[in-house]
Image 1: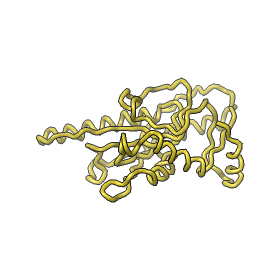
Image 2: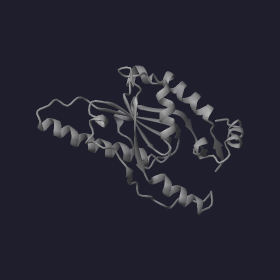
Image 3: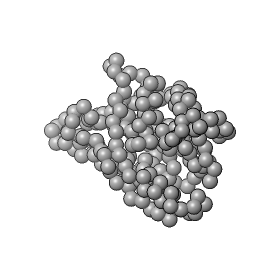
Image 4: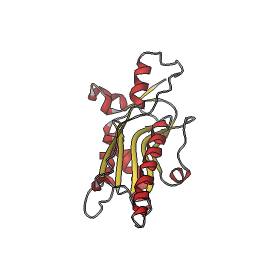
Length: 211
């Protein structure tokens, strides 16, 4: 599988262009981001630069940790590039949101989940599913108190969506208007700058991108 090196400059540009072309500030209007670690952290920070402030404050970035990609990388390191993946890693939480803190309450928010790539879609689907469960628990608490529960919306933002058969699917309400991918691309190996040991060499290789 061929490798594509992506530079910080390219990521910065594609994020800005996607916010403008897909009207994130006008349509979805995210007011909180949930970054999937570790690949979603830097894209979320870059993205915040181009999102409109809420009440004169920057959009909050919350972090969650999931284990799927770490397991896949271990498997890939021990096998040949052209060998079919036989491992079915289990997605588990390594870090999650604290719903007991009012500062991280997500009820009534427009939540944008951020990651670097939509590959098999297992990680994103898991994040949406678990987040939805937590939101329903919090909503039930409000209903039990006789309070009205405002609508909560979930969206997805990724740098790259690989055009391949996905192992899981996202809800229709996300795919129809709340799914934002900077680039649609074939199933190729992406190398991001935050994984580079030599950033100058990585940046030079990124100049060969034709995708």
